[in-house]
Image (cartoon, rainbow, N blue to C red; front, side):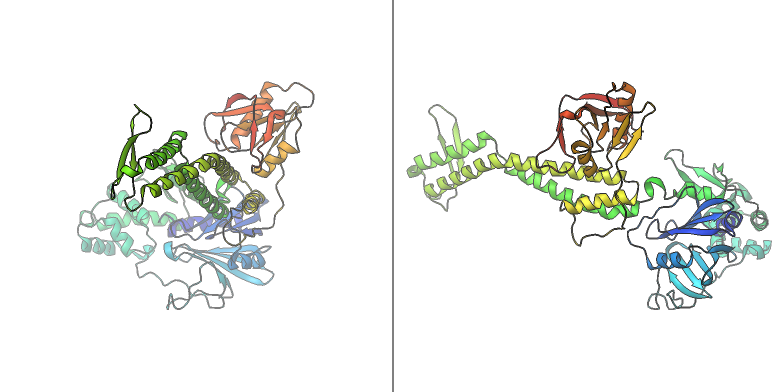
Length: 562
């Protein structure tokens, strides 16, 4: 756990410097286990994230505005919006050597305290008023924990104190005794078990500064040297001398660790602030991540619908027979009728020539049926196969169109950058009959408009945000002489370049092609092929879903989508 007591101490200093006396302008829930705040302080907007997930519990500033990522607000979020929005942040406190940070607000109802307990599986976010719990992220009743109940209306009781020695109360003699009792166990484990507020990362750093071996066994170390290394670090903490850093994961990208002090036992990179270190390590829930939680239910519905379509296609493939196979069934039935008298009772296999000099045809016989009954079974299979030969291609084409539409839905959702765009995908799924269970009611938000880009030389480029807008672009918002642009063989946005009577320059076409690639399933690829043709050659598929078209006379432009 890298968010240890020292991290919290550094964070408290950073937040005090940036946020004290700031006004809360907005409270959102980026996901089910987080709350985010927009706080205006020092003539700047700051964005604070508190996350109570077991493996990523943390509190830090993030570089960009946090977005709402859940469909339905939790009771805690509703209470926070009522009590905290408009209030001023007047104090920040950390209990000594604890992974807890408390934010004090002054608002209309008085002084409230928001407590972030960042303790792995026991992490929680708790709002209190005069020591009483108003609400919390995780409600814990007496049946779950007899020692500490966390429920609205109950008094707030801090977590039980650690039965460990405090770092600032240690002596060389105590450390020597710890190490002597541990034998050949790694010394860092002893520090974690015996000293309050010491995480495995911090403990390894202390041992490394003692002997240049972070995994050194306890018996091999001098208690005084270890105490000196620990005291040096703790003196820096007491004096608020922070050295935030991150440890790059060069082979994988991203970061392997972070700390509020120099990690000399790793190859570290200094960074400007502990919040920046945490945002780099965990990734701030902004941009593509901002709506991840809100997209999950829709992704699940799309995936379930696609599985149903794929099963249908597989079944149609099994039903489809070639003309030769169909004709063989007729021949087998005629042979069974012709040679019926020669077939013995109980016989289960029969061979005969259909044409003189032709190959022997092998026919399986059900010995419980008469030759005539076996022949009739062949004719029944022949009639069914003939009907399937006529019906299956049409059914397969319809199923393939449905699969393509679902792929378009998945792309629309993946590219959605706001709640209105997510809601538009939800609405289309429900209208198309793909939504299973109770009809979902998401947040009320206006429908997103078609993207409109005007080039430097005045050409207008229109970009559909979803399948419905793609349909509108082709059928209502464009003319036959406009250019239609779309990523080749991929779901994505339809793009229209309006023809205003001037020849459309190649650089404008290329810009439109780049937009078509960017807003397609090919986003992020180094090279994407894009089709370009006059809109007059683009036609909606008869009976197809919105945005599904056929086209001709296209030329291909290859562009980057990044």
